[in-house]
Image (tube, rainbow, N blue to C red):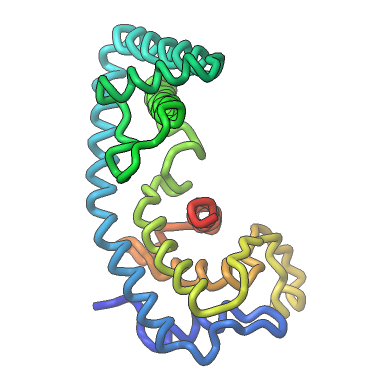
Length: 253
């Protein structure tokens, strides 16, 4: 059974109201359809992402058990990649063409395989450089895991609750696309200190923490609050939702 029904869709639409802006009111039907599509995407990705996370953690545990042997191997890989990237960045146009031929001949670039007209060799070389940069990022990320013995903070795809965020990315992607189709409002991502409620004011309570402020973030956070674990606890807090929206916006720009 879906987590989203007509009542939930109404609550999500109302959450996007900010001042005079009410971009989703009157669109609850299409919104409910989008919420259920986003939910399906989230639930399809989550088991695979969890299995991948478990495999990564098991591999990291094995690497840590090996100690210095694996650490030295990672150091060699990272150092080699850095040298290759530095060398490419210092090449002139002629050298880039030769590198492009070499990368193409050795099957190290697939940039021209998807196009009718092959890319210029200099562009193939740039693509090879980009592949090396991605490999360096992956190697350094693995090295951080090895050194720290834990997930190295915000650079890794995990929420503060230890939940892998690939399923959240899938959910946010569907809802962001719906937002773009259903409204003329930008996908703004703004949060700030939580405003006290009238009850807080009457009781003299001091409130803490942030809350979503922009309509798009309010909509997204209200929707993701319904993605819960077996105990009914939301899987994703506000910073994770903001991060997923920023990743989507970067891809869509």
